[in-house]
Amino acid sequence: MKITSARVIVCSPGRNFVTLKIETDEGISGIGDATLNGRELAVAAYLDEHVVPALIGRDATRIEDTWQYFYRGAYWRRGPVTMCAIAAVDTALWDIKAKAAGMPLYQLLGGASRDAVMVYGHANGGDIAETVDEVARYLDLGYRAVRAQCGIPGLASTYGVARDKMFYEPADAAIATENRWSTTRYLDHVPKLFDALRARFGFEPHLLHDVHHRLTPIEAARLGRSLEPFRLFWLEDPTPAENQEAFRLIRRHTVTPLAVGEVFNTIHDCQALIAEQLIDYIRTTVVHAGGITHLRRIAQLAELWQVRTGSHGATDLSPVCMGAALHFDLWVPNFGIQEYMRHTPETEAVFPHAWRFEAGFLHPGDAPGHGVGIDEAQAARHPYRPSALPVNRLEDGTMWNW
Ligand code: CS2
Ligand code: MG
Image (cartoon, rainbow, N blue to C red; front, side):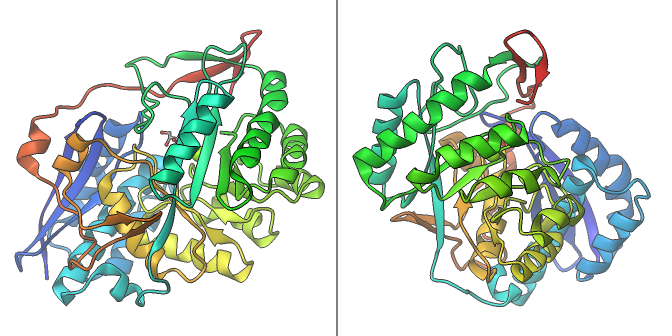
């Protein structure tokens, strides 16, 4: 089966997405997500200039060899742009192989290890009362797990709190908007949020929180310890993880479970975190960590150390990534949870998919392949729009982590 064409489709149905479509001489095509929020055209250019020309004529069935070719052959290895491009190729080839086999992708990976995929939704509010009500709404929708983010008194904005309660798109301007941050205010406020949530809902619902890289290790240790009475499912990205050793300090001080990895793009970014059991969930994704082929390697390393998967699933990961992720999630033995931030109806019109939500779980469906398509006519109606993620400064103006 030879690759006859590979096209990069950039569209913006409410937000930018980059999709790679690979076609073969047997009339079977596959698609992969290549979306990197705020850097979409960098990946599109990498694909167009450095990947697509080398794809034409390759054997579409040789997924592993193609992965190795674009990883080892890049010379300048790793990094979000390169690994996003490789991920798109890999996902499209797995889609093709499963379609050629006439089976849903999860069957090709090894079959279902569970009945369905538990997901978590995003509740957010301007203050504690509104956030508690939003969590109630997600529980009423059937979610068993809900992430809670709320406004911090005295701060004009903070991560995860949006005007829209169902859809959250942080890339809100062509040039990064500037946010201000106060760790002191944040550390004082978050325990009050989870105290109120447990008082209202008890300990049945799984509650999660995303720190979004904003604390130093000792501050993260303090927050983890202060949240222990509220038994979080996980505390996410407590501190920037370029320095994996930083998590040794956090781990020494708290038993609150830790989740990291949505910004990682290879196994090397998390090898120490996993092997030293410094985290409990690895958040790497199909689109940002080299596709199914590499994500499987990360999950299998994690399994050795009883670390479970908890893949990122924000709206800036396209429905193509979500579809492929659900097949992965249904198969992977050490599954933890899947993030599920809903896409808008205009996005879903561009990317018809087989998955369905039921009582807090998603199932990928049993269509051959990963079960997600792209309506190119719909896509063409939504041209690319420059958009950047915000930046964050401390109250004295010091650049900080957004
Ligand atoms: C967040 C993301 O969903 C999450 O856990 O960290 O929303 C993240 O901010 C965006 O994906 C960035 O584009
Ligand atoms: Mg996050």
